[in-house]
Image (tube, rainbow, N blue to C red; front, top):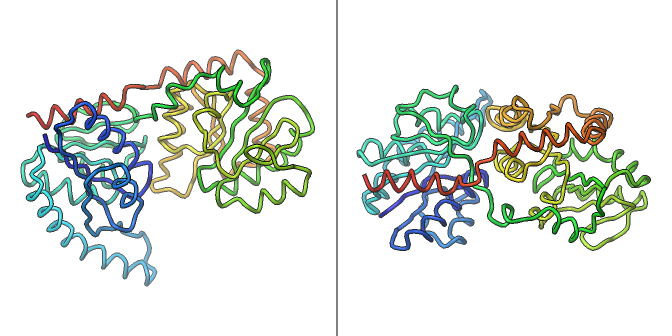
Length: 377
């Protein structure tokens, strides 16, 4: 069984594909798996590091602007479409896959379309509640469309019925136990833990809004709070030091508040938490659902198709979380949202249950089964 994965651009596309590919390799050791991506994005590092064969093509997306640089970029993209189709055809002819799988990113377009034209079984997975342009186009042509959430279906015109598979969640996170994690972090019984982060790089609007809240929380013992400023948030660490925070085991500490640059034990911190505050990327939301966590979501407005807003609303519409749009984000609005959550234990429990009910914890297996079925056909 030979499987060709096409994906790239962001970790949100690449990591779920790697999780599925690793599971297939483990369950079907005789299988041959290859990835196609671009040389200048993170797939060129992540895929080989995971031990998979990797081929590259040159492709980029169109820029929605009439600025001279954007026009020049778009002309280059048109040229790349021609060469990427030829490169995709060569890779497919050489590898002879039984099925070709797209996990998003511009690279999926030419590879999957070429596979369709060569009558090879194809499928795609859409991570977000609002599909990207590439997957909207491919859905009309491929044999099977897999979704993280049902909400994405209304934005597609698929050739065949879609299947809701969920999004793979890291195994260590699924195995984490709240009581063990709280003990490891030193959180006493009867105290809430709030966890907030803006992604690995950080989010300045969230750091700005959280700053005064954390200073105030450090003076009280109402609840514990772990906050990550992100790798780009060094200036905030200095501001906390200026306000009496001192070096602790994993970050700066004052009272019940800990401020870190980066959270490298997310499975422990998230499983121990009672309330999660952050962006609305598909992977983060799948983790929140898998662990049944209440959340305050602040979607990034800077992503394509504003898909994080749609991701967040998938939870909000099911009573599984709350939302503050970035344009409405202030210290006051965020503090009010935190207080509202933590002052109503019954509401908190209901939100946790609703989030847990959205979880699909066997997403990896569901996706793999579909891929293998297509390959065997």
